[in-house]
Length: 159
Image (cartoon, rainbow, N blue to C red; front, top):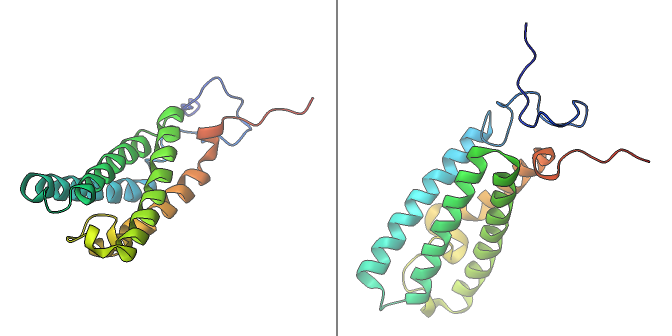
């Protein structure tokens, strides 16, 4: 019987890297996370395209922020699905920006409600999406943290 294929064959087997290529951020329970990110990317893209095409003059900043959110969700989806070291690092940045965005835009949408006449992905902390945009980055960062060996590589041996 042959040994399982390792995603990073140049690494020593004892440093916590998954034993198979099927154990990265986009496999196992990570498939559900990737699916939710993909669905949110699709919804955010559709909403932002519609808002920009039909109502841009009503709230241009809010609608451009929706488009930015859509782009971030797309990057996070692809990064988590691919699961390579580089793509997970990119996903980590995207998910971190997502968290920052939903917190900042959510707070501003309550402080200055006239800036958000229509719901956007991140306004009111994602209320229009069942608060999924608020919860998802925490889940995404936790999932990436669980697979941190893919991001950080092996721990250095003490000298």
